Image 1 (cartoon, rainbow, N blue to C red):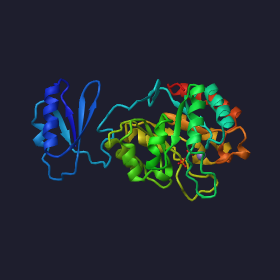
Image 2: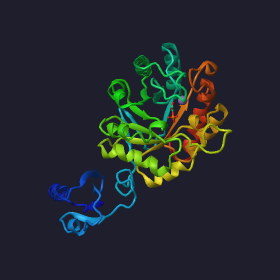
Image 3: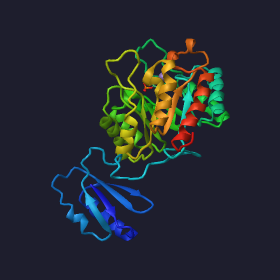
Length: 337
Ligand code: PEP
Ligand code: MN
């Protein structure tokens, strides 16, 4: 249920409304906008009479939310969420660029690539220290050593760190090094992990599951939001279809759909979506044109010997050229990058 308060509702009235809602057993989430405050009352009460609330002082409108995602939906918050990560914003007019290797491989590698990322003007360095691999015999990541190297490379180049968390037990360790938690596609419906990520304060990037509908994807964010962490954004990374000329099928339309249904930012990952280097720039350009709030690109300066995802990694020069093209597209649609 969403309760829209009157423009001039006082703190005392709001407290009273909250007290009533809690008395009825609802869990309360407050969204304070520039013009009005909205209260989200979460709880399954099929026969609840909304008039119990609409008669209270300070209440303008009360209505039931029929979508299963309550806090992630536009009805709870009309304006776009802008996530602040240190001095960088994600979800506003400026499109966020995240780039880096698939995996952190060595000190040299991550420092070399961090320099390329900084040169491009991107603000985020990506890289996996814990890797979800299809084969148990494939490189699994450097673990804490990888996190340390990434933090150092990012700091030296004034970048923020985005890295994947695969298990609840890794949250505390990764929290010491990262600025953004990446929730990988394979873990999008790991509900116990989602619940724990609801307790952290740092932003969580929720990648779309390999076979997830947009609604299921929104529900994963709902888990994190309902746990109290409001800093959530989405990453479209392609879904499994019958097509095999691409690694996955990039669902470009997911970007406007998420923007319509949710106030949370959505970025695109054309690297995992296509899996092949030559398809990455066209899809990155399309994603910016479609309104993505950020782009995540995998890069490598020796892709043939990369420990993971070499075929989709852009060479530094290709990546730097792409950045210039993306900037022009951003300007054409009234944004910056
Ligand atoms: C990644 O970003 O390196 C990754 C493993 O992505 P996904 O979870 O989308 O496969
Ligand atoms: Mn990868």
